[in-house]
Image (cartoon, rainbow, N blue to C red; front, top):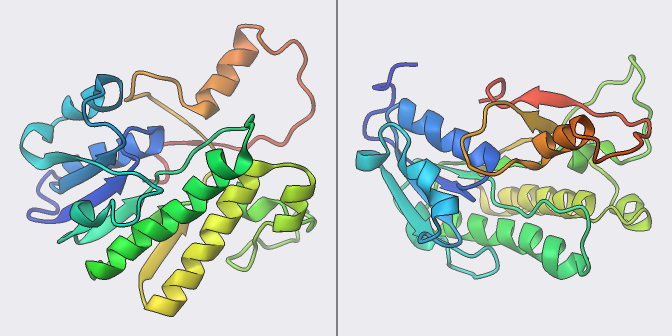
Length: 236
């Protein structure tokens, strides 16, 4: 798309140092948007250097510090924006304190971002959810089954199996839709699976790391798993 596709438009991307978010920032800049990108620490080059190096970043990228657990933390970043892309959420499988490390940041963070969007009268919020929020419900996944917007993972199933990441994404998306209904905010959720493709940030994303562990022999045995991969550029 032409770099002049959206001149004068302003977008915010939360959790901008992440894999998907970095690609969103890049594509928004490519399409002429001015971008406000939130990170936890704007002084950390490992989180920001690759963003500052993007084409158009010098003139149209502004970095903001924000904390998912701090109410009002996103107010300045979203104020005046035409749209907000909320991607910030922890992605860990092995945690010692699920509530502190996964559940609170995902759930409270989503509500804090949406609260800031409500105050700023944002027109549309696009939320990066996960296949984890829809796939753990005990329903059959045979060819005749249609997966639609009514599908949600069951929190009790995730909790019983100690799938804390699944639980975090399920609760966060459910809370987002309830907030949308109660406050009249137009939201869209995207539920990607394992996301791979070219890297913009200096560190491996979780999906690519899983493949690398198979290649370099770190995983000595591979159990049968359903693993669905999507290229980062296909859904953007």
